[in-house]
Image (cartoon, rainbow, N blue to C red; front, side):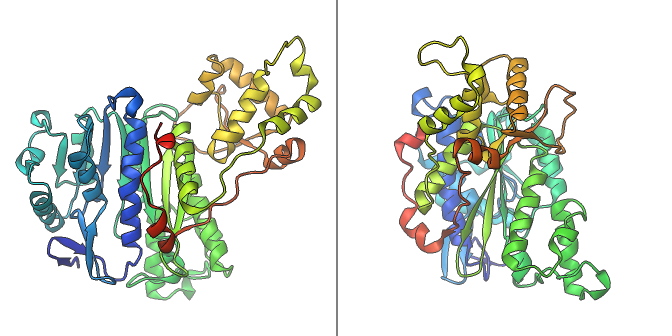
Length: 440
C-alpha cells in the first residue's frame, strides 16, 4: 500500500532514492542542453521529457527523514525555473489516482505559476507545454501521439521493475524505422535487490527447478519473467555463481534485450551503500549523446577518460594495410581508417552498421560505408552479430561489433575499462554543474 508524508510518496528502506533523484535532477538539464541544440542553436529544437511513472513529484526518504524532489519534480524544475525552455514539453503520466492527486498539490505549492487546469485539459488547447495525465499507459500513448514531442526522453521508474511489454509498447509507438534517432529511454533497475532481496521482494532462487522454490521466490521469478519478457533469462541467472557475477549477467542480458530497439545501451552503475548496486540504462540511437553522457559520468566518478593514442594506432594500421594508402597524397587518411577510428572512439560497445548517423559526416553513401564495414570485417576488426531487432531491413543492413582482441593485437588499443559505480559519498562531491565543453 502506498504511503505519503505530506504530498511526498514515502519509500521506506530505499536508501538509494535520494542519490537516484539527484542523478536524474542533473541528467535532465544535461540531456536537454544537448537535444535542444544548446546555446549554439539557441535551444530552438522541440524536446520532451516523458515521465511514465511520475508519482507525486516529491519523495520522502524514511532513512534520512527528508523530502526531496522525485524525477518528475526535477523535470518540472527544469521547465519552470530555467531559461530558454519554451520548446521543452514535460509530460507526467501517473495512473494511480492518489499519487496523481498529490502530484497536483505539489505543483500548486512549488510552482504556482503552472496552471494545473490547463495541464489537465485538451492537449491542443495547452500553451504551457506541461501535461498531466491520470491515465493508463495505452491511454497516455494515444494522447501523446497527438503531440509533436520532437527529441524525447522517456523515463521508466516504477517502484520495483518495469514490464518488458511496457518498454516494447512505448518503443513501438515512437521508433518506427531502423534505429531511428529522436527517442531515448532511461530505465532504472534495482540490480542488487533481485539477488539480496528488499522489503517484500525475496531474492531470486539459485536453482532452475521450480519444485525447490519457496512461494516468495516463485513470485520474484514471475516478476523477473515480466521484466525480461520471457523465461530465457532463467538458465543464465538462477545458479550458485557469486552474486557479482549474476548481477553482471543480468545487466548484460537486459542490455541485449534493449538492443532490439536501440543501437546503444549504456548502463550507468552506482552503489548508494555497501552491497547495493543500481543501474540507470541510457538507451539511444544517437552516438554523440551517448558519448557525451559517458564522458560526463566518467568526469564525475573518477573513472578514467577513454583516450587511446590516434597517432600510435594509425602508424600500426598503416604498416598492416599499405594497400588502402595507394595513390593517397599528403596527410589524407583512408576511409577505412576514419570509419574504424570513429567506431573505436565514439560508438558505445563498438557497435555499428552502415546507417549510423555519424558515419554520414565521413561518407554519405551507405552502400560505400557497407563496403568499408565488410573490409573491416574481412580484416577481423569487426564481427557480424546476429541480434534481434524490431524492423525488417533486408540484406543490406548488417550489424557489427568491434573485435577488441584484434584491435588490441593489431593497434595496441584497449577497450574502455568497465565503469566503477558512483557512490553516495562521491555524489555529494561530484554532482556539480555540467562543464560548458561537454554541453557544446
